[in-house]
Length: 437
Image (cartoon, rainbow, N blue to C red; front, side, top):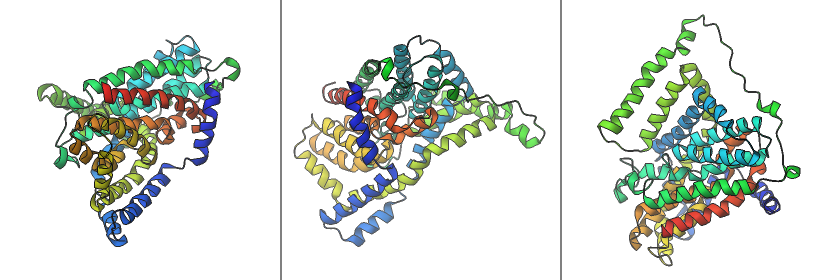
């Protein structure tokens, strides 16, 4: 039943879903024309707003790129990969493999979204080597755990507003993670996700005749690098454990000082620092880390090219008055209680056009924050509604699935049918949690 329901949706997505870079170009044009048509701004004024604001998020862009890169490098370190190989032996049945990969992905994604994407994909490959299970659903299950990332430790929206000097600090101040990530309503949503998502994935397991299996020989192409003779001084330095640990271990000691002695909290810079130095220590040598970095950076290309456009869109929306008009329209039918739901729904739609939590907050904050202030709504809950909306429709928007698909050797069409079912289930859970918890 689920297979037949998902097929038409997969075909529709394949046909009409362009590359995320095309989305940001379309959104730029829509914002510019709306500013001219609705706010009566001149084309020259809009052009100036856009150009002057184009580079306003450079620091933020680098922070977002490092979240992905450091998470990838940590997940790709030899100790983590060995742990996944041992953990794969726990599964004994196809259904057990589906649930296990979902749990691992959920836990890893809650810790760090880049970490979760890579861990989920690598673990799916390890399980496929040991268990005969539908490979499409196995990889889709690994990706479905990604939906909790924005309610977790590396959520870009809650960490952004917890960071001194963030771009909305003048409006809302600095909001600690105790009011967002570790708030009861958010933790309740996360717990519900850990219960529902694995069960739904298990129920979608096709019959043997309908399953698609993978050639295990293709999965065994990961061979350990052979020891190399180090003849040049530069090679010895690049493969020096001592050099890496002389820098990596002090970095971790600094984190202990930050958390234990100074009572510091989480923000984007802290998370990136922690994951970077964990990766340095676990990779053991500079060369191993650099090889992982070369793989990781490929997945960050979209962030590099798209975030300046998000900054330009934000400038148009704020300076033209479009953000104020949109917030006034939202206030006209939303209430203090229902605003988190409408924020979540709108964020899910916007995420189809802006497939980045940080970029989406840059676009939506100027709209949602004035609406929340006008209605007296809880600002942290509204911020988390944007965060969950962004994470939610990643089950439909394949932008962040690209690293998973590249590792697994699949295409978006192979997993999106299964993800679409999760879209409806998780949407109901998040909506209820934001309004009633």
